[in-house]
Length: 383
Image (cartoon, rainbow, N blue to C red):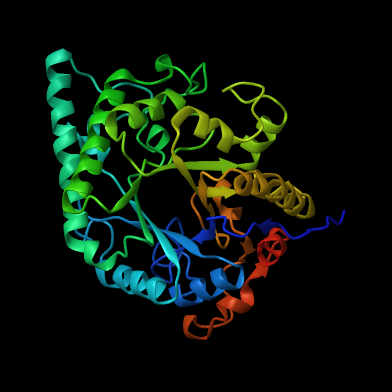
């Protein structure tokens, strides 16, 4: 089946950035078989490709110490400070805006052994109060330390600091099998929730204490689920935050289009729902079609799903003025990723290295094959 990919237009004067999740090194950030990672495009090549696809913004992860220092030996045997600053500077010189995903350490509050999947952090009222205070202080130290060290490299007009990634999932705050899909208080572990609300308040206020004009977003949500938790973040942790960060994938879009959205069957646009609920500008920092079964799903059918997703999703993003950025995760596949689901996330098919050549002779750009959805990105026009 061949799907047409008509161009999608962004009206004149409409402030909306489009882009990809990128990396600060030649390594993919998850999984791998070569030094623990998958070798791929250099950052400069990634930016070249982003701009070829009409991109104007990119999301990059930063994993400093819990004091905000990118010379973090626990994350990388070589310091990530230099490579990260180099990419920030190149993006600035080439007119590419950036979302800086700041990795949090919420799970260390009280000790990592307490943050177990499937159960709450054990604490009575007195102990919980101590953890809540500790959480705020640790979040503040991270946000403040990171901004103190690196705000000199951020153009305020071109930078958003994203305060964490999907904490409801990666910090196990949401109960597995939550009966109301994250919409209600009972879907969450109560002690973890209280600590998280305090921790992210500390992160936000730590960054703002360095410079109140630095733009921040909430932690990125996993998309369909965490409404109650984000009610708490917006109302208690960071009422004045500039952006709400959200993730949205094809299965979310399909459910909403079918009238099965847990927030109400009348909603057809996640943007309309979020603006109505929170009255915040929105950045989408992950979206795409997911290759749910890389061994069994027909590749042609998979690519067509991607086209249908963006043909449905992008016009909704454009039509709601409060959506300010749409960022695709990711730019290319990671065939060696530990997560089978994430191996096929890329807009470009990337088979991995040519095993017949040494690393120094790899033609990484030649190995890339654009999926059908790339045709939509390349015909994205600004009127």
